Image (cartoon, rainbow, N blue to C red; front, side, top):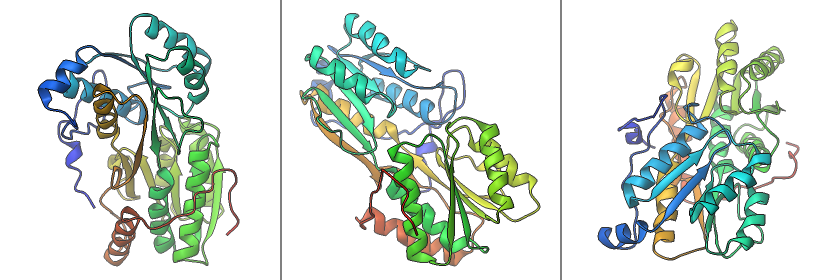
Length: 339
């Protein structure tokens, strides 16, 4: 478990975000790495606003941490639609940027198209797992969210009193489906009587849809909700606070305790800064392709546990330690499995 020392050094340009302030990674001496990095220009393409205090803000913070570690010249474009990503990428490449990072799982087809055309540019692509047919000039950052969601599912299994657990996801992509299945597996392992009610609302950042879906789940008897949404969580929080029923829930990406202090139990926290520093450090030292995995214990952590009995918190901490140690969890990304 962690006390979240990563929250120290909180910083943002234009809005509050969580800053992960970890030490820079480098396989070479600082002087050697700095000299190599001085020749590099890095661009990051983000699908949303860096003012979201969530996924995109963490990507922006990661970029700034890379600057501190390696003194690269950097730039970013935010709120980039998939349809615009190729054009913007080409503009960066034509301007001399030799590292292009896609902070988001929406852009693999763009990267796959551009990488063969620009062999001297190194691309960084985030995905849910290993990138198929990975080009020789691409790095893959794999976000193994489902392993963390297994822990949140265990928390739900041990906390529910109605034996009805809800899951609200945004877009139905492999990350979300795998995480739904991980919660389903955790219910099977720790509370076979519990039923999972899940919905995908088609948008990670729509508070209205999230609130309406949460209200429907609460009406169906759900008393614990595990969530894979970003800004949508604010609508869900309002639904939970408005109901007279005792309902608990989880968040992910950043801590959001002030959203609903009496109802929030845990957050699955992401550390993109250490991941990008590790990958860029290896690019600076000449490695043009590779695989880096974010998972519990390495870039993904569970927060302090609140609003649950001490024995439940202790059990969940132990389950988290088991997952960090390599507890096998089935990864199913194509369809939600039956309980």
